[in-house]
Amino acid sequence: MQTNGKVALVTGATNGIGKVTALELARAGYRVLFTSRDRSKGERTLEELKVQSGSDALELYVGDLSSMSEVRRIALEVRAKHPKLNVLVNNAGGVFMQRQTTVDGFEYTFAFNHLSYFLLTNLLLESLKAADHARIVSVSSSANYGGKIVWDDLEGAGRYSGFGAYSQSKLMNILFANELAHRLSGTGVTSNSLHPGFVSTGFGDNSSGMVKAILALLKRVGSITPEKGAETTLYLASSSEVKGVTGQFFDLKKPKRANPIAYDESAQKRLWNLSEKLVAQWLDPVQSARAEAQV
Image 1 (tube, rainbow, N blue to C red):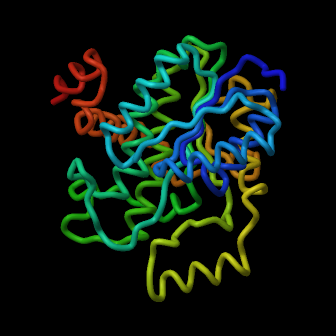
Image 2: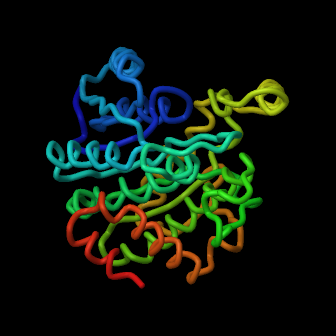
């Protein structure tokens, strides 16, 4: 199959909307790079995507995105092979009802749903800037409307709620995408976020008890297919209709107003600076020096 010369990276593409996004981009002629936490599952997905897309231009990158060193390793591997990156889809994420910490000591939801987006994107910025009109797409959720940034306890050490942590992280995705759009102004790189819809995937399957039962019921009666859920992601990643559009939140392929907090520029900058300091040791030297200089 002939490729179009463009390269796209999709995180969390072994199921759900991430897998559909990777498949459709491959069918459209992109060389598609995707991540998987589990090697065997990733390799099975790689073979499935090759068969279904008719393309051999797919690459698997294995790593746990809740680990910042793993995020950095994947980013460096991508940079080494692909000095130009046309599309980055920050898709991997989840909801975790019990508070747990990562290998780096961060609360899991905060690390996996937000810090991984932040670190991976920053490490790939030069590759994105080197491409022609590159696009960064961050998958958020309508849960952002219920989100609140608990500045004095971002990681829920004092009081943890699974849905609260998830909603906060999805609001953070939009704050991050909007601040990124400001910072990339004039570079040709765009940054947008989206709500994919309530998709019938493995989302929430790690929950238990009543929460898992409620999510299962909602999936049966009110969810959409992964194919439908991936439509807005694909639209932002590849449609000529949104070339040059940046700093927007989308739902059903249309701009939509997100949580008002998402447009608070002081909150955007505060989250960026805080995130930069937290992942400073995994950033590139110049980025790290800037982060360490933050007061």
